[in-house]
Image (cartoon, rainbow, N blue to C red; front, side, top):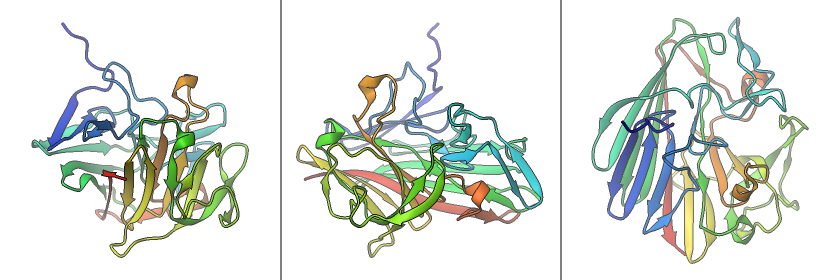
Length: 305
């Protein structure tokens, strides 16, 4: 009997020369290839996701100070899973199984119910669709508050984009005019304009030795309402877009990854609806009324440079 993969059932979809694998555990985007190239620095079928690779970050993305917060007269108390910094990180659904809703050759839909618990005392119903098409990969998400009281909500996604070359040689574009300043525990303590700093990637430039674990704000959107971040090199462009539901992009160049051989091999570009520690600060937290739903979309595509 073959052992089950650590990430559960593997859902494969294809379109033309593109292929995606989404896992049962966490509805995680394990791999994406296009035109014979890996678009993601993902993980193999015989290992679990590490460092958030491809994971869904809900009902909050990024860090939560001490794992404690209050909303609508209720208190949440989440486990500290970033022990060295004393934070709860990346929500509650990335290690739980998601049910298969439907699957075709080009698309797969999964769903998850987050039941009330000390870390999040509301019932939240989540649905995701991963779909391949001529424009690349599109990810659509829907969240519904199935509680009798209003619930706080935030979501993010954690793909590591790659061109198959070290980060130092990648040219990066992030159309954001501000970035969050963080303390020694990686929690926001302020923000600043990126103009004149090493964090200004509004015009495409080589990353070089710049280290990023940075939340970007004040995103510039194109005429279709989407923000687009790009990695360029080796004659290719990997683009991540996000619709108006995502107000922030977190960028991470992997400088602290273990093992060290994985460092600076890809850039995590993470679309997020809210900033780190939002459940504590209250900034940009989505208030979901009873039976109300929120939906959003983001995606990735590969182009010739």
